[in-house]
Amino acid sequence: MAVIEESEVREQIRKERTALADSLDELRGELGEATDVGARLGGVLPLAIAGATGAGFVLGGGIGATVRYFMRRSRER
Image (cartoon, rainbow, N blue to C red; front, side, top):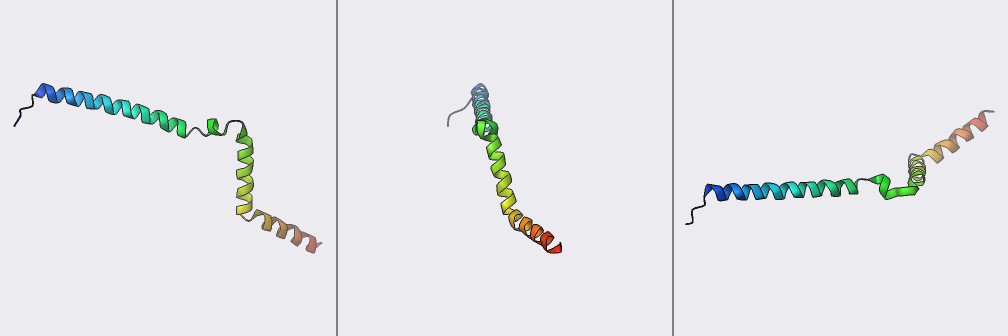
């Protein structure tokens, strides 16, 4: 059985810490790139917002509710 000296263990721990810190920095950079919505959408951001608003209106039943509202108002007159 080989005897590992304390200095060797300390050196190995130092190397592992350095490798872990480098990996963490790389991960932070990649995460920042992946979550940068403004850069991904670029010049079409207003169009994307309008599309999302329209989709939310339709999915929320907005068209049917609006038609019922105006039909009810026309019958009341």
